[in-house]
Picture 1 (cartoon, rainbow, N blue to C red):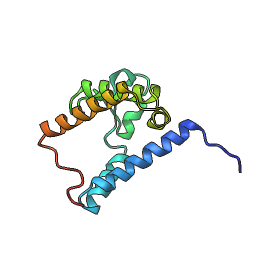
Picture 2 (cartoon, helix red, strand yellow):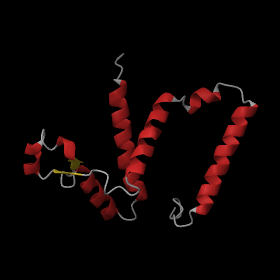
Picture 3 (cartoon, rainbow, N blue to C red):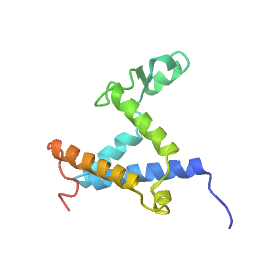
Length: 136
């Protein structure tokens, strides 16, 4: 009754649940969601970095390729760097629940206003994206 789950396992389960749920949330049709989920869980499109080719060469018989693993990511290496920095910031900074326990001060209000302004300007500048809740 007093069992506590390992924190890393809990993160892994939560992260994957949210990723799978977003597929259904963003898909236009059920068939589209099934196609995306099939691609997510298939081993057809796995590309490992070149430096692993000598140690894991036996995986090529299962359809796993070796190459540049960031060439298909839009934005290239910059995107990978930003994702890594975002992950580090997520782990190191306090979460929003800790901010709720503090009293609001001038610097925190200023920081929030700057972030809000940046979000508004960025969303207005990128007119190519469709509003997420348009179909609802």
